[in-house]
Length: 299
Image 1 (cartoon, one colour):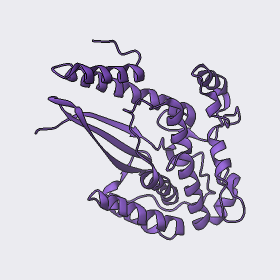
Image 2 (cartoon, one colour):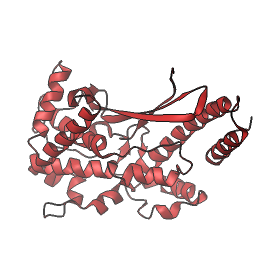
Image 3 (cartoon, one colour):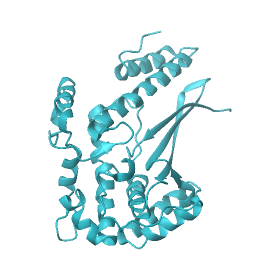
């Protein structure tokens, strides 16, 4: 039976910070040489440098195992790019003649900003490998795909932004101890006993500055403000390069983008199902679509 790709959706789980300028502010003299023309050699060099860190060594081992499970090498997964991010592609497959039978597949690709100096590239690699290794796949086609869960998962979830930031700070402390002590954000979460304060790290992501009034209102209007007790009108610490916004707002916009694509594809699948499918199964799916996509008109 010939399958068609009914849906391909790019989800930038990382919301990667462009150049990490808000995280890494190393003194002059600590930057290494720029990348060479060989992408493969650059990636291999970054991996060799990261492996000098105990945290990095563990990440590389786990990432290599995950890549092999998909028939790839780690070098296949990591590429040079214009920014540092992890793209995960979710593919939904179904045949027009049996649209009720759906299969899902996901693939991830890491990009490291080729314009960074070696040290910043290495720290970005630790950040993105955390997303790649630990980020749990989600299915936006479920009826309970909610805004509050998506925002919190993006920031606080396993393999989310907080997790990647803490891992990056651990690598920084293990390999660049002097710079770690003066870093504006990593030093804020150092417990001083070799551990990082994850609760404090999470709070930093909810500092949204002047965006606080509009974000608080948007969450209140949706009845989900109580899910975000750490939201503060303090100076912004982290900004998503994908949207140029603090992460809570960026995640909200990403949610709307994902949901719009999901609804578009579900509407197409509903059309297929209405062509000869049993009325009961069509009606159940139509109700699910209406619940998730209330603005979709009935056909």
